[in-house]
Length: 441
Ligand SMILES: Cc1ncc(COP(=O)(O)O)c(C=O)c1O
Image (cartoon, rainbow, N blue to C red; front, side, top):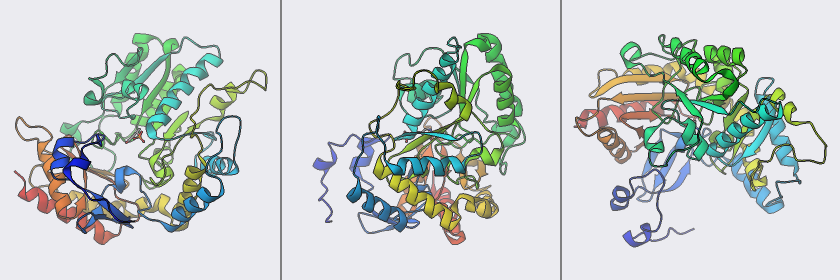
């Protein structure tokens, strides 16, 4: 296909998401192709993908199994109604996904994005308590600095101020525990930090304040990504699970970025050995090729709904595109690719090399902390006086010019390359960042 001509006029109509639109349109950064670890830019350059797109292309780009599965599916069955009808691939996919998750997380509800997975999980939690006769449990607990997508439930339980402050009063009956970032005690930790398990005790304070009979669920990212990679202190997630169990509160893990091999095991659930009641996923489920998300729930949660007359709908929720045939085909092709290439555990093999490479940036200009887990990394920079975020944004622009795609949030560089990355490409990524940082104001 030929590339459309680009002029400042035809860039204008598209209001870009989470983008500095005016800055971008003055000097656009456009990808026109992708293969393996590299993007191709409109001006013909190769750019190493240090972020798996947006944490989603875990198997890298243009993977044949996925491409072929999508092409076949579009020709065979383009769409089937999602309500009161089905198609075989949705059932096949749900069965394969649930086999990847530890028991009892053995039921899957399909959505089209991480944000929708979060809304679905929150609604499932509220409805679960209600169908069991505990309808007073309506309160949802999130965490400061949490990111759970951009819909109203997600921004309400989320804790990123810029994503919340413009949008009114949000959902009522939401409270937050504190975040776990503790740079004073944990700077330059490799893997899980030693200090901070006690931050889980904040949940006890909220349980005492609100009474457990009013609390439906707690939602956290096992590793907080979008806020700049906050890795849970040792023992923290286990303690959250214990407190939830003591008080009949559902625990939701938002695994939209940690799912599908990012930490070196299929899910963070396996990595941390803590099993929640609900898990939200998206992104890597289709390698980013077709929008899709999935919520996993425990057999207990599912079973609670399976009562009443059999001709009645059990859960009044769903999307036109829940379990879309083309998305299911993409996901099945993705799972085949992950399995054939051992990608769901490859991050564990690379983790030491990755950690060494990242931590070699200690002492580089502006760096105040480095964090890593699985194939996730963060480099926190000292903000420019009076101009927060500007230094990291400049690093992003300069790295792009130097042929490497990184992501920044606040003054933090966040890295999450495709799981197919080679050691030489890890070196390229880190060396480029080093050069960029040394040249930055
Ligand atoms: C933890 C988490 N939850 C939810 C989302 C939202 O996903 P989406 O952008 O697909 O709606 C994201 C996106 O980055 C995420 O990181």
